[in-house]
Amino acid sequence: MMHPTNHNKLYAGTGGAPGIYISMDGATSWNSLPLYRNVVSLALDPINDQYIYAGSANGFASSFDGGTTWSISTDATIINCHVRAIIVNPLNPNIIYVGTWYNGVFKSKDRGNTWASMTSGLTPSRIWSTSF
Picture 1 (cartoon, rainbow, N blue to C red):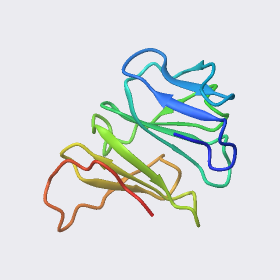
Picture 2 (cartoon, rainbow, N blue to C red):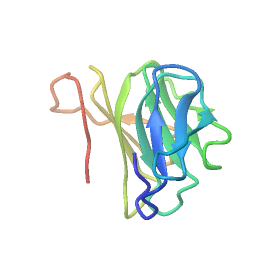
Picture 3 (cartoon, helix red, strand yellow):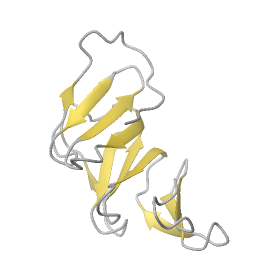
Picture 4 (spheres, rainbow, N blue to C red):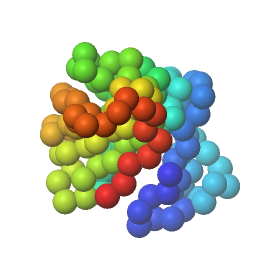
């Protein structure tokens, strides 16, 4: 994932520890961010780039300090949902949508603390991407 205004700042999710890497120099070098999960999706808050969101087979994680520390969502609605896609509302970054593997789409109105299913009318399927 590329930072929206600093194109030398890149993020990469990995299939094991540490979970996320960050490059500040256009991918010449990388440093780890300590999430320790298999990260399959990433998103940045469009207003505050210190807010990073990550999806994994185990659910949803958030960092509000640029990836130094992470919180794993404990909302039972999203735990163990394979979060494959994340989108942050550019007009209201408190609102986040995630697409999951077989569990549909979920919405959070509080930056990922609590979640609600948004799958009414959506056939259970694999969600690969989301977009505004």
